[in-house]
Image (tube, rainbow, N blue to C red):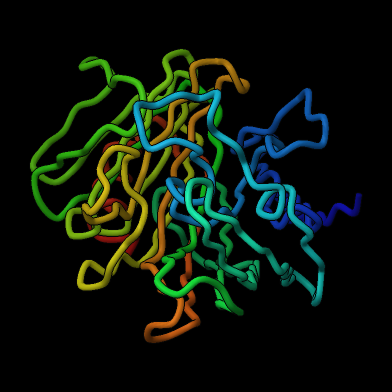
Length: 317
């Protein structure tokens, strides 16, 4: 399996084109993403991957209470059949065609997916002592399917346990639970920020609405001398429809951001997830693109408070 490594003085990006993902980012010898040390070739490789929403249509085989025995990851999505179609210095593009079949209805959708990864040159990144940045451009095109079916892009980045995930919000944070229960000591909030611990020891998932989130989120994990930070910036569009929602919330609006904390069943990681707006087969546009800006870097302990205020509130400006 082909691996691409982009090396820099203080960092390295490792890409796995056949799985359509950035597998790992390393800064000052510290690995930022969770990767599976016992990977057997299945979906759970780790890193920064792309799935297709809604989960209720393509993954869940039930419409009742959560029952993990009735959950199936479509092989056409992951591992999929990603192909490397363009590769230049510090830029590459992968694509795949996927046919998705609804798990509880006689319906399907045929989509074409594309991901372009490119390094972003940042001459200065305030408060980071060392860093690397990259941009991800994801595309979705409907090639056919059952009229009325909705589909969207679903980006997931797997996180090693031991840190805290922070979201900048436009209003007082509120979330809804998808699976499990979220213990009160796992999360906290201020008027404009939500924080959640990632432990990999207690399984739950929750989501936040597109009108609530600003599009800025960060995962900070303590390492020697400070924090290893993954900062992500995307573009929520609350005036458009989103299609991913809890299993029992049919008919409700979808969420733009989700948090997953694994209970150890799949390796003890967490996930920072975000969605694009949805397309609908046979109605309106059949193509969409979303973009994400990611910085991975080291922040010294003495700089943490100022970094959090600068990047989460102002978007790193």
